[in-house]
Image (cartoon, rainbow, N blue to C red; front, side, top):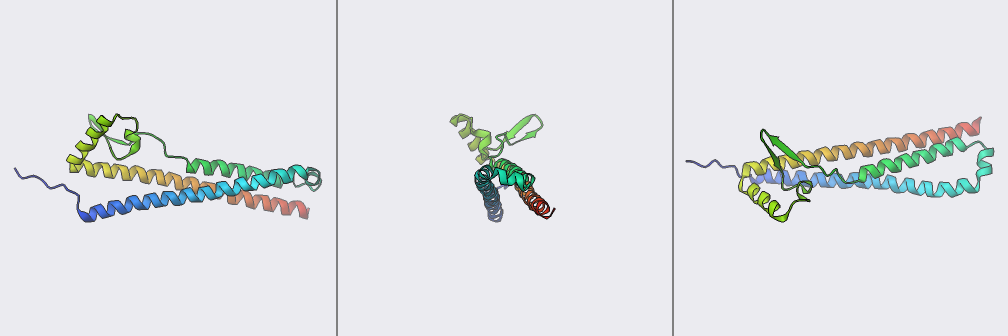
Length: 180
């Protein structure tokens, strides 16, 4: 009986490595962007609170409570959204149901972080012995990694949108108050 060759070719391995590396780098970029927004808005609130409290009479007199409240709410919402974008992925199992059995990738930590070392070693060894299963798990891992990355970028984009819209509304409200 001829054995079917199912080893992963070198060019395929290069593509897989590049995809993993790109996903990790894009995750770092998204986390850095969210972290910048989180830090910037935390600083803005840190400076805004003492200034407002020490000049409360002047703020009420000049009727700039609404623009400052808008700015503070924008900062708070941006901080919450940025924190949500930088939090770790959900710790669910990444698996694929195959009719009667469920296959679990041994390469995603969410699948094995609660396993005993013996069970994990058995899963890992059986995966390495079966190249077609190995390809399936790599595909599954890349899919879930991409889905998580897409969610992260959507959250960061929402965070930036809230920040930009809030800042514009605050500035426009301030200009209107001073012109009226």
